[in-house]
Image (cartoon, rainbow, N blue to C red):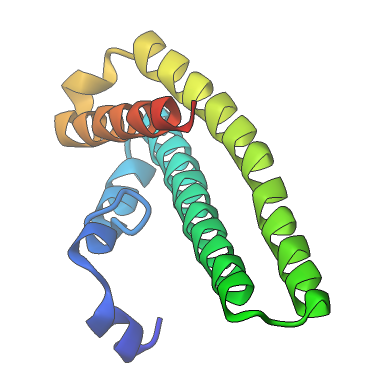
Length: 142
């Protein structure tokens, strides 16, 4: 990881489960269920970031399409922009489907492995917070 990347890393990214080097070192010597917790959390974080990215991209491309229509750009350029908007919109259902599946897997895992609370409470709580964040995000999608 380059120094510039480390310097510009946000606090949320720095404290995320995926970037927690200390947690990984701790889990390697301890319970393998903690490794599973980190993996499930990382996958869920990644899918949530992808979903947010494509939602922002969709909004940006739709605004660009509206701007083209208002400016009276050539029909060919408007058609191309409509295809771009459709392509970005077509990515979202697949990501939402994957996010729901991973959310369900992670939810079942956390309810099945309640003993993880006793082993590493902070990691377990971060997992629950991520689960709640995904739940809210998925509810907004509907």
